[in-house]
Amino acid sequence: MAFMPKLYFTNVLATLGDYALYKPWGLTEVDGIDSINRRFLMPKYEVAHIREQGQDMIIFPLEARYGHLSQADQERELDVLQLEANRAGLRGAAVAVWDAGGGRMASRGPHQWQAFLQSISLPFVRANLNKVISW
Image 1 (cartoon, rainbow, N blue to C red):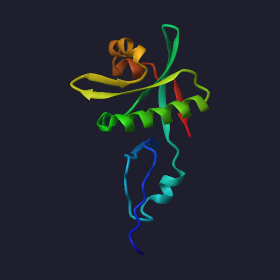
Image 2 (cartoon, rainbow, N blue to C red):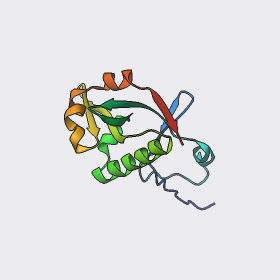
Image 3 (cartoon, rainbow, N blue to C red):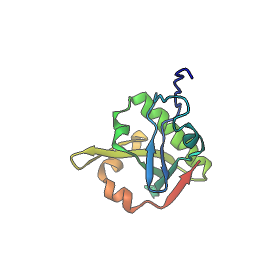
Image 4 (cartoon, rainbow, N blue to C red):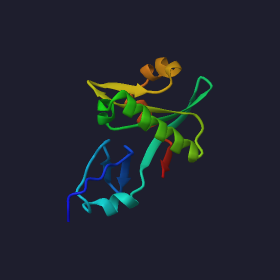
């Protein structure tokens, strides 16, 4: 069989039991290797759905490698998370947070929330995980 690369068009974190899988943008694979498992794997996220200053926020803690994506790829991923969170019945805007190293948390979300996001930490986010969504 000839080598036929496959490209994943979504960049998602997914869990299956105790295992976490990450599909980076542009990941290629040899036809048939692990494609059956990935086809039926549903992404699953624990999120902190909170209300702060009269605004609903859906905070997605992501892997640190999210911070290494281009700004365009980060925005695309955040758009998918927003869409799926709203489809799951969660109100509010999606925010991505990740470990930026050195005990710092980085975030991507609405500009007007930056002051609040700079005031919280990953332990705060983990302590407020209160919903699970999957698709």
